[in-house]
Length: 106
Length: 113
Image (cartoon, rainbow over all chains, first blue to last red; front, side, top):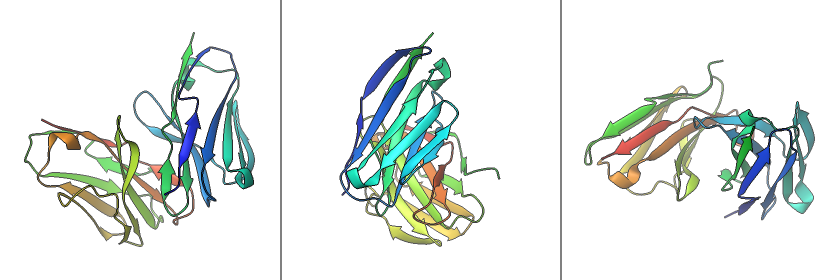
């Protein structure tokens, strides 16, 4: 099946710092989504981005489908950004990476 | 829309008991997914329905697990008999079709003692 690799696995930031999370995938995909799992366990949709670039406030994402990767940018991080960020790709069904655990300290 | 609704939010049961998890997808969504999340295995797909028909159940761990979707607005995941290693968070998700944005419910945290 398709492989999804996320990096880094863990990240600690000071509030206000910027960061880039990466998602590599092993095959062509029909769909790519980024999720944030908050400390209460909820999976929150961030971006549906099979290709191109999207922005939503302090977050933006870019997917280069031909090179099989996607990037999630977090600018001016806040403590509420803490949690696990998942990339999920769809070939036949939605397959998740192992996530990047982000801790933003005040 | 209320989003994907799962019940119960938490379930604690004794080994050997039957457990039924419930899911109501977003109205108008034709695809429904059941996922399981554990520390060891992450988020893994158990089963995928399209138009109420199971399309891919290759992720269902063993015969103790079964899932049904009797109509477009309701699905169940049943574990019988339950075992401690089934303890996990079970998520239900839905999407308009198989290749569009998926939305997740809040999950059911299952503990089997």
